[in-house]
Image (cartoon, rainbow over the protein chains, first blue to last red):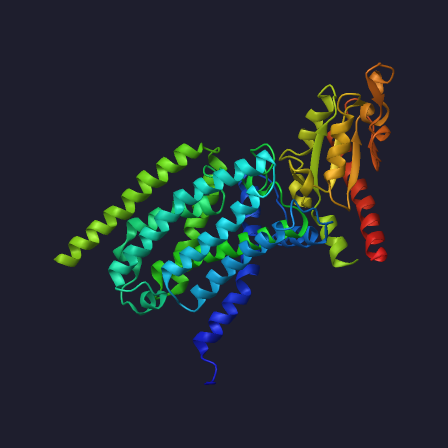
Length: 290
Length: 148
């Protein structure tokens, strides 16, 4: 049945198309802000796009013939998650699509004999182990509040989620730092190889496969920020302000902290993150009973 | 200028390899990458992975121990790429030119595009050398586009 284009649908489609490029701009802005914090002028804001185009034009060096498929899978699954989010689907589906994307990256890292790449893959698994439970627990808290896992339910719910689950919002800071691969929790490979031997999980990527991974990373950034913006879904401008606040704190943390060990990442995210979300969860349950 | 060439010039990622230098030039290379000169405003990033690098910065003379490593790093870099030899040792072998264990300049092992003289080369000169290397990169990039 063909109906006239729904304005909501148009916004969703526009969001899907714009998101990867918006991610590139956000990364560029991040590099500029980081440079200013270090008293430098910094690269132009469109620098990530130059990097991407350059990488696309490099001679392809593949670790295996399976690698480009996995790089495409990484971008593809994140993009699928983005589409699910734009059409306000199930939160759990969205989070598990993101997991699939990460699995692609890890398998690609294990897909060569390079010890750096394998070590990076192992550490990427540990990062996943740190932030995935936090995201799933947050989704469950959302279900407790709104009665549904659908993102649509959050939009239709009267009160902004931030007022009901402030502690869960704070816990998203950990998710964002680990996902953006920022210090102190950039154990699997930082953005620009500042603090490691080679490039961690990205070691074996070059040319267009690295470009795909980079594009996936931009999309993932917008995707995670969009998920955080759901904490004030009633007015998405406030939602995005909340998301960008966490993003800015992540950049500040990146500039003042060295990298910590993976053990401290696990400890912080499991103890602090779990405690924040579970406290919120219990408070919500008690509030429900009353 | 084509978009691809422009992007290549705007985003040169540097791989730094110490081929047995006295560390004088390495300290100067690091000085050229420090916040005062802010190489990142030209998109220059010091990267540890040869597979992702565009410019190979070599310091020190090639010797019989590490020339294979140097060749290996060079071979692992995808085209288009340029090589910058920093310091007198990397250019000619310098004071090590007649040592039994050295081969001489880096150009005995891999083709060098730009030589930066000096013992040790000054950071301003290194930055200047990278700008010259970018011109080489532009030539190579355009040649490659024509060949396509």
